[in-house]
Image (cartoon, rainbow, N blue to C red; front, side):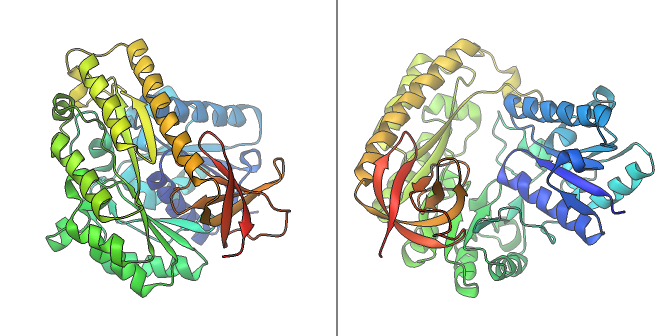
Length: 444
């Protein structure tokens, strides 16, 4: 009887891709994959450890699965990913139920880990995270029209609050031909939307080709595949080139959507964060994009409560958000992470102040979103149908201006069976909720 393996994938889309690669290796090796952890002989948890909340979620999942091992039929538990990489010795020490730990540089050796624990060995492996090969056959788990494609790994930006360089290593690009090959395979499988990801997508190619090559890559994906939508995430404001702006304007497949994590606008805070280009780069990039790409949807993230952030700094950030009116904004409270430079910074902000600032900024953004969404009522949006909600009796869809999981949805009122997952429809917006919209299908 084949060993059944269950997976828990936590964290960002980049982590999900690692999970899909590990799934590919295990299926090729003849293992059976189950979506029900209670049926599994072995469960693999691919963890996140970017901020404190992510670490807590990872630990909670380890404890939940460990309970299955003690009380149900689960035989072995393997922990991979960022938590494993960051706390190598601690995971095996603190969680005796864990049978194996693999770092981010060892995902391609997941079959070896399963074989070892199946022989009742306790196993750990931490290959150099800078040398793990990028890509590999994978089992796509986003079965509703879209798929992620990773174009790079690691990061050289060295923001003082960030653990990514210590977990994922230095920045390195995938070869363009390898990415194009994978893009073709995904589109041939029925993928309608390719979402381009990496820790810093705008740096793509600088190490391989000596220049920022993201526009050239996007152009090749558009011209060499039949994909209908291409979406870019994780762009840095100081690397928004004229070539990228030109690509937005001439490439019909490239969605007028960009994700730019600005993190703050106060120059003293940005300097302490070691954000390259500072306030000037942030303002210039947003202005250049808005001036030159009509209808562009801009998503961003900001951090409140960074060490030394004063009331003046925070008020400036609030005014900036009101001025720019981001289409989507994620707000995070600063998470003090050991082994990062900011951990030892003076003037740490207390947790209540962080939360108060978070609440204020979220309210500002909510009011911006409410106004933007009300302006969409009566207008038509092209959407990608993703799934059907039998409870609400609506289809869940996304527009060109919404990335999966992080932005809003459009709920399409239609009878079950009348629409297909993974197809495009034109929807007329009839109602606005806090961050979502409701509409019905109309003729194009």
